[in-house]
Image (cartoon, rainbow, N blue to C red):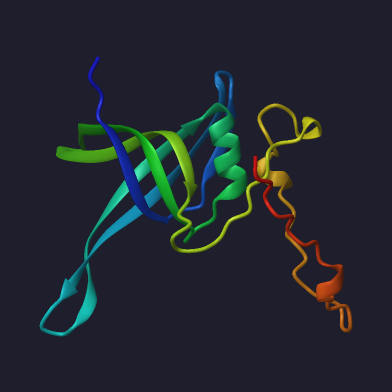
Length: 158
């Protein structure tokens, strides 16, 4: 069977909706993808048209999407493109969905910290509702010194 596999780079436009179903975990979110081009006359970047996709994730990917993504996050999504047309209230509607195979943060636009699910988290990972807010506060006078920071070890030559 021929399927259209796409790789799309954009921003999370809606909060991921996570559901536990009889068939397993499922998550969906809207992805905004805006083209950009260089305007030679004004010597600046301009935004082009914005396309919106509904991204669907299942099983372990759904759990990790629900626990990892927030509105505005830059992401890369790879998956199967599904274009659907239906008639609603006398009008034809077309939607573009992506059945995600992989979702990740776009590291060309920021940093991310990857964490594998531990055994205590279960096979599917941490529940999205259990994601605690990190403590970013540094207590006064507790700046770590360079001496106590771990130093990288040189790579061995074989």
